[in-house]
Structure formats: C-alpha cells, structure tokens
Length: 111
Length: 111
DNA sequence: CCGAATCCCCTTCGATACTG
DNA sequence: CAGTATCGAAGGGGATTCGG
Image (cartoon, rainbow over all chains, first blue to last red; front, side, top):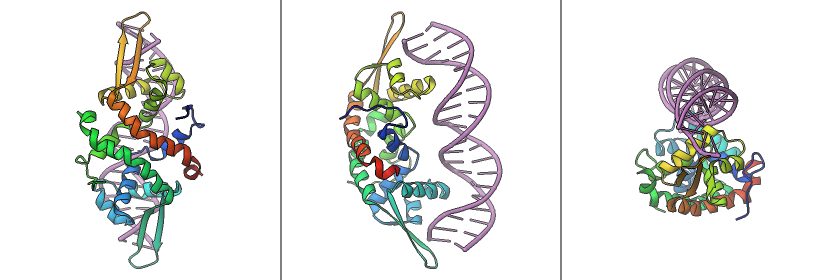
C-alpha cells in the first residue's frame, strides 16, 4: 500500500473514514446490505435501540455521501425506501472482510 | 454471509465495531501498521492534531482490546514502544480493503 | 519522554412532543 | 408512515498543568 500522510485535511483515508465512524452509520449500511431495499420503519425495527432522530440524520448523511439512495412515494400513508447506491455496494464489499473479522475475533477483542 | 441480528448486546459486529468507531483508533492503528513499532512521540508527530490526552487514552483502549502491545523501558528518559499484536495485524489485513476503497472512492463520497 | 489529572466546552445523542 | 422540533443530559475531546 502506498505511504499515507495522516494529516488533515489532506488524507483521503481520514476524510472517508470520518463519514461513517459514528455510532450508527455502518450499522444502517449493514442492515440495508442484508435486507436489500428497506423502508424507514423496517430499519427502525431491525435496530431497536436507534431513535427516530438518529435514524433520520444518519440516513440523510449517508444519502449526501452518495452511499444510499432515497425514494419517496407520494402515497397515503407515505412510503419511503432506502437502498444502497453503486458506491454503497462497493463499500460494503470492502467492509465484508471487516464484518467477517468481527465475527471471528469477537472473543479476543472483548475478553 | 450469515444473517446478523443487529441487536445489542448480542451482535458481535456491533461489539467489535464499537471498539474503534471513534475519532482516533483506526488512525492510530493505520499509523503503526505503516511504520511498525513506534514510540509515543513518533505517533504524535504522524498525527499532528491529536492531543496527548486522546493519544494516551486511545492507546490504552487499544491495548485493553488486545490490538496493541505496549513495551516500556526503564530508562532515563523513558522509552515506550507500541506495536500491533497478532490480532491487530489480522485486523489491519481486513482493514486494507477498506483503506484501498477510501483512496479510490474519495471523490464520490466527499463531493 | 511519557504520560496522569483537572477543568471546561461543545457536540452528540436520547426522550418527548408534534406535523403532513 | 415518515419524519421535524425542542430540550437536556452525557460524555467525548481540547488546553493546560503537574509528576515519575
């Protein structure tokens, strides 16, 4: 791998990682990865301890970062669906190794 | 990949990711990955905007999580060196795809 | 040189109530 | 159903000082 300078704001790794190094972003992405296109309330049910506020703002950020696409339908009651963009899909492909690692090394890290 | 429940505290992925989903942990790990065994002050210089407090506490957490090993030498002045454990090495192997992804997709995400 | 301890700000986050 | 608005608590994080 190429040598990185870790200085801000020049370092791409820092810029990218900072986007989903929060409490919920990766979790929401994993959730949609596993279930495909999902509605707002479906995501809430899959992550029971996320608040409405945090889910909304997380989804908004992920959409701004071009990782998610939001589709709203003008129905009553409203329906909104979220799915991964192509960029989001490729991110989750890169994330898969990390997810697998988490499953395998759970014990070593948390003991 | 196996189906995950994303509920806390049962989900291994959540438990593991929560360990380094903070502002500095991944950055410190990347830094030591690239430079090998490093002294405290070397790390500080590589990440100019980290405070002493945050570097110390981050290093301590990573040591508790069995990702780093800390070697202190009883010299004057003191010398302390940090390096990746075997677990840490394997984590960074899984992280590599994510780092490469960051370099490649920097534009799409930050635009 | 390598931290620990203190003080304090400021953001993040949760709870609750409310809207189209 | 899918959010927004508001308020407050909690704690992450910076600046500074002190110690071995």
